[in-house]
Length: 418
Image 1 (cartoon, helix red, strand yellow):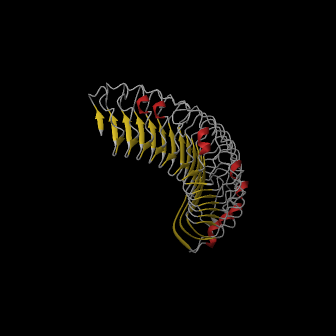
Image 2: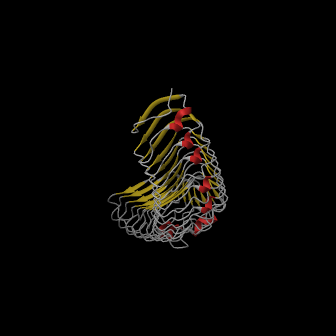
Image 3: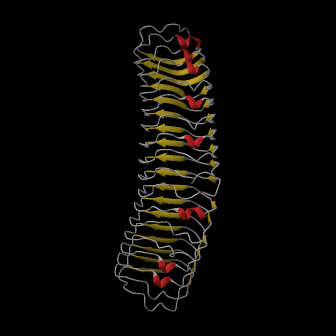
């Protein structure tokens, strides 16, 4: 059933109690309310109400208890609440609330809701202050997404969810100062916390998480000062990205994280002083980037790291003094890069790095005097050594038996004999 365009009222539909398929109400610019649907109790398909710029109320839907498909409320510029849905009990698929200029959800708006069969999406609602959309829902089979709700400050309703089948994405909700709920599940498909300018701490929200099957992203949260209370987390199946968090000083909450199957990116955190919290990390399946963290002085907490499956890239860390902490590293199959780290004088901590390393790139390290820590590498595809002012030889590579290309600005490549 489609209601759109020039329809200005719904009187005459009072006898309808059941719609077996979908009900789409869209671009009905003259429609101010839904009077006429007062007796509707059941929709077998989806209910979508969108782009109705004069719609002020959903009160006429107060008899509705069941939606078999999705409920989507979007682009309704004067709609202020969802109180007409206070008797709705079941949504068979997704609940989507997005692009509603004036919407602010009262506590009782969906107080009877007990089941959502799909995902929860809350997107681009500039007046929304809380997440009181969940009624008594305890299971969400798919994911929760909250993006670009600048007044959203209260998400405690998420605490009642005890089973979440997918992931959580929380981005660009600038009034949110902490994750004021505690997750009651021990695994997620993914977790993305990005661009929330007010978040200072995660609180205890993530304390029960043991595993994240895909990516864990913490990025562009300008007020975040620490990552704590993620102590149960042991495994990340995708990548871990801690990037561009301008006030982040410590990441101590990762104290039990031992394995990241994807890559690790620690990038652009100018006041991050140490990697305390990564003491249990033993293996990274992909790349490991530590880049542009100007306050970082050492890598000591990485003492248990033994294997990096891709690149180990350490670059543009102006105050990094040494690579101490990497003594246990035996494998960096993709490559080793040390770039623009002017205070590092040697690579001695890499002495256990051995066998084949595809690419070695060492450049822009003004105080580096030798490469001796790389002496146990026996095969490489490409080596680039340049712009290291105090380095005058590549003797450390004398044990190489296989090398495809060597690029160096040194006048003497001593000790190499292939």
